[in-house]
Every structure is written in structure tokens, then in C-alpha cells.
Image 1 (spheres, rainbow, N blue to C red):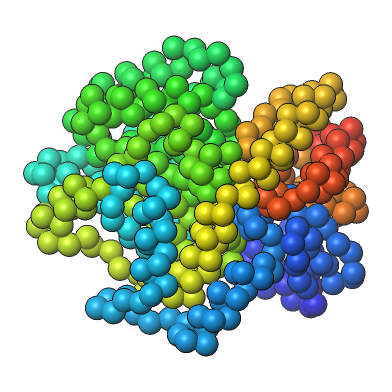
Image 2 (cartoon, rainbow, N blue to C red; image 1 turned 90 degrees about the vertical axis):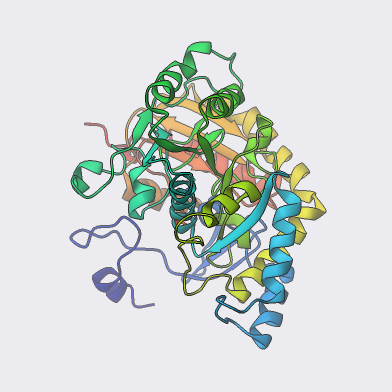
Length: 427
Ligand SMILES: *Cc1c(COP(=O)(O)O)cnc(C)c1O
């Protein structure tokens, strides 16, 4: 592959054009293995950012894509409908909380979040109330488009860069009590006082349930989520739950909300929705919210992407949900979790490790110093694994089909890296 061209002309996520790191060329992938151009193989620890839960090149997903591409790859969704969308939405309604009855299909996670925020704004507009603020948590991540960014952690997403353009919303302290810790009542104090103070302006609360992903890989106590639901009900504020990362079994429950037994008013799904094959997202809401939105001045929900309900993506998503419905993920995720639980605590004895945490098929190693990206990335590749840390976080979210040897090789590689001073920026 022409890596010089890639380096010179192609922008990769969050990279500099002045000093780009060279990317590793992948030729194909199978199961949990990525194949590099030079013949090297890597055990995947990332599921391509939470998405490839069934592994790569899965026969059932391939078949769904092949069958659909021969019928119709795409057709506009305005005024037309098709079987793959109907099948997919039926499956989504069967899997998600009962109160959710309307599905809006969109292109990416960020767009699903934009859609959820617009739904909340149109909902209050239709009710004749001026509510234009959102309440969210510090250390959150909801995407890279403007509205999604406006409810993402202000420091991590550099809100200061966009001052004057980005709407300013309300941030409450993120929960400190870990998933397995004893619940601390005071954890909800800041959230409670902010919703009490501002509820008349707040259209909705938006948060990631149980696991805050790209904003810090924090795993928090279910009681926090129960308190949030209770306070939203008390103050009559909508609750948007962003399960784009946590959805479809990653945390050990089908949806992370289930750890707290709560139902959101609006639910955002993405990432693993197509089993990592292509981009697709969904925003679900209740009949009451949807009908209120549509009773307003506009008479409809004001959104409609060109590639809405893309049949190819819907067909693959539908096949992925059929795999989920079989239920093998439950034992697979539980096995991965028990391996994390067995080995991660010992990692805290290493000098560079500050904290470890895990839930379901998510394992997190927080370090004292930021990683030296080029060194640690090269070391991981040399050790035959694909792990992509950021900042002070080395984290694992392997495909569910990973066996115990795969998980051990990921953990072995991390164990090697955290003992190597060169892997960290120690100033
Ligand atoms: C990744 C992510 C998004 C954004 O999804 P994209 O498909 O990257 O636009 C939104 N919310 C959460 C919680 C995510 O993890």
C-alpha cells in the first residue's frame, strides 16, 4: 500500500497533518484477527471501536449483505419503505424497553444524538414551553458533530475552541462510585441541585448509562442512574440515554439501562448495531413523545438524512440482531468479564498503573502518565495485538467471540506495556 500517500494526504481520526504517525496497513480480517500487509496477524482488542462484536467476516452478516446488494443497495426513504427496515425496526422494538415505540433510523451515532436532542427541543416547543438547555455529565462523550459535542465533556472536546458557536449546556459532576463499590448518596448531589435549579429550562438530560466511554472510560453505580430517572420524573424532564457504545450486550446486559431497571424517554443506538459492518444508528422514543413532537407547529419531526434507512445497512443490522437474539453473547461476555476480574486487579501492583476497572466485555487500565502513542502502538503490534489507548487509558473491548487465549494475549500485551517506561510520557 502507498503509505507515503496515506501519510501525506489522508486525514485519520484526531491526527495531525504536521506530524502524522504512520498507520498500519490491513488487508483483511477474519474472526478476531486482523491481517497486516506484511503478513503479521493481530488479535483485535478494540472491536473497531465497540462495533465488531461478532468478529470480522462473519458468514451470516456476509450473506445478508450479499443478498441485499443483489436486490437493492439503497433507495430513498421518503415516501418509500422496504423489508430490511421493517424487519430491523421490529427486532429493535422487541429488544428495547416496552415504552419505546417509534424508531428513527440515521447514519451515525453522532447523528442519532443530534436527532435525540432535536426531538426533545421539538417536544417542548409543541407543548408551548421554551426549553433549550440540556443537562449532562462531565466526562461524557456523545459524538463529534456540534450539538453532540456541546453535551460532551467541555475539556476533552475543547469547547473553548468553539466559543461563541457552541451552545452552552449544564454539566453535573460525573458519578464517582464505581459499579462494584458501595453506593455513596453524595454522588447525586451535584446533579440533584442542578436539575432543581434549572429544570424549567431543561429540555432533557442526556447521559451514557453505567459506562462513560470516550470521555474517560468510567464505570459507575446503577443507583446513580436510578436517581437520575427519579429526578427526571420528579421535575418533568425527558431522559435521553445514549447506548451507542454500551448497547447490544457489551456491559453484560443487552442494554446498560437494565443494570438499573430504568426506561429512557429517548434511546440512541449505533456502533454495534450492524455488527461493525457499516454505519447505521437509531433513535427510539415513546409514542407519547413522538406524537407530541408531531403535534407542534412543524407537524412532523424535522429531520431526514439522504441515506436514511439504507437497506444494505438495515439488512446487515437485522442479521446481527438475529445473532444477538440467539443469546450466545451472554456466556461469551460473562467469560471475558471473569478473565478481566481475575487478572486486572494484579495490574495495580505495577508502578505505572493508577486504577483498573471492568464490566462485561470492557476492561480498563488507567495509568499515571499519558501513553507515548508511537512507542506503545508499535509494541502492541510487535506483540501481535491491536489495542489503541488514548491519554492515560489503555482499554480493551474485544469481540464477544474472543476465546480465553485471545483475551490472555491481550492482557499479556498490556502487562508487558505497563512495565515499560518507554511506553509513557514521563515529564
Ligand atoms: C461513538 C459514540 C458516539 C458517536 O458515534 P459516531 O458513530 O462516531 O458518530 C456517540 N455516543 C457515544 C456514547 C459513543 O460512544
